Image 1: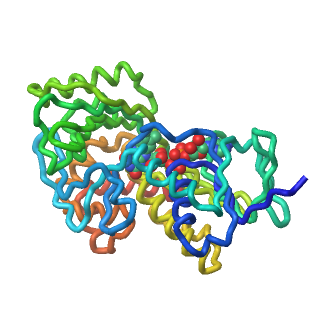
Image 2: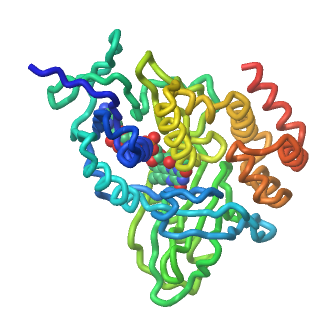
Image 3: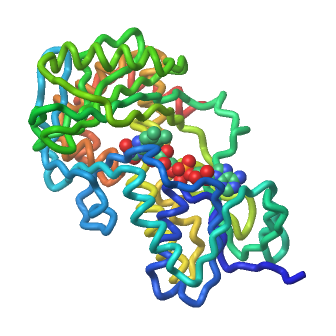
Length: 385
Ligand SMILES: Cc1cc2nc3c(=O)[nH]c(=O)nc-3n(C[C@H](O)[C@H](O)[C@H](O)COP(=O)(O)OP(=O)(O)OC[C@H]3O[C@@H](n4cnc5c(N)ncnc54)[C@H](O)[C@@H]3O)c2cc1C
C-alpha cells in the first residue's frame, strides 16, 4: 500500500486550523507542499461568533458582520463611552468565517481534506504518524494540532469557566444605535460571581444580546433564557423582537501552562496551545497572529513553535493568573476590577495591555488604577505557586 506522507498535517478545521490552512492556500511558498486538513464536522452552521479588537488592516476584517469605532461600558453607577481609536471592534460570525475560508481551501490543489477524526498520534524519527478513525494511517513531516486534550489537569492552576448564552434578536422597527456596541454592561446583579451583558448591534434592527458569567457552576440554557429576557425587559422595555439565533457555550479561562508541543514535528495551535487569553477569554485575534507568525517562521525555515512562544509569554501568564486569582479568591469582584480598569483608564491603553503590546508606562498607569493590596497578594501567590 502506498504510504501517505504529507509535508504538513493540520488536525481540526476550527478557528485555528482553518486560519492556518487558509493562509497556506493563499501563499506561494506552500504551492509545492502537500498539506492534509483533518476535520470530522461539516462546518456549515453558525456555531459561534467571534468579536475582537485590532488596529491592523487584515483580510479577515472584511468578513466581519459589523465594525464599531466606539464602545460602551456600563457600571452600576454610570455609562462610559470608550474611545478605542486607533482600534476598531469587530464581530465575525462563525458561518461567514467558514464560508470565506473553506471554498478557498478546497480550491487549493496542494490541500487534501479528510472528513474523519484522528484516533492516535505517534512521534517517529522522521514523521508524526496519525491513525484515523476511517481506518487510514497518514504521516506528516510537521503536524499542527488543534485538539484540546480533555485530560489536562487544571487543578494547580487558576481556572474558571467563562460560560455564556446569547440571542440574536430582530426588532420590528429600527431600534438599535448601531454606531456603538455595549462592550460590557456590569450594571446587572452579580449573584456572587462575575457576570455582564454585551449588546452587539449588527444593524438598527438586529443585535446579539449575550450574557457571560465567570464561574464553575454552569447555568442551564433555560435559566440563561430567563436572565436574557429579564435584561431585555428592564433595559429595552420598548423593544419588540423575535429570536433569530442562539449561542450557548463555555470557554476555559486559565493560567495553565499549555504544552507547546509533544515532540518534534508537532505543535499545538489555537485553544489547545493556550491562545484563549486567561483574563478575558478573547482568542480569535491571538489565533490570527499565531497563524501569521507560523507562516512566516515556516517560510524563513525557523521553528514554528516560536509563534506560540511569542504570545504565550510567561510575563503575561503571570499577569493573567494574578487577575484570575484576585477574582477567584474574592479579594475583589470582577465587577470592581473591570469597572476600575475601564473607567479609570483610556480604553486604548487597556486594549494595548490586553493585546500584550503595552509599554511599561502604560502598565504602571493601569496598575495604579487598581487597588494595590489585593493584586499584590495574588501576584505573590501566582509567583510562588
Ligand atoms: C461560542 C463561542 C464564542 C466565542 N466567542 C469568542 C469571541 O467573541 N472572541 C474571541 O476572541 N474568542 C471567542 N471564543 C473563544 C475562541 O476564539 C474559540 O473557542 C475558537 O473557536 C477556538 O478555536 P480552535 O480552533 O482553537 O478550536 P475549535 O474551534 O474547537 O476547533 C477544533 C477543531 O478540531 C476538531 N477536532 C476535535 N477532535 C478532533 C480529532 N480527534 N480529529 C480531528 N479533528 C478534531 C473539532 O471538530 C474542531 O472543529 C469563543 C468560543 C466559543 C465556544
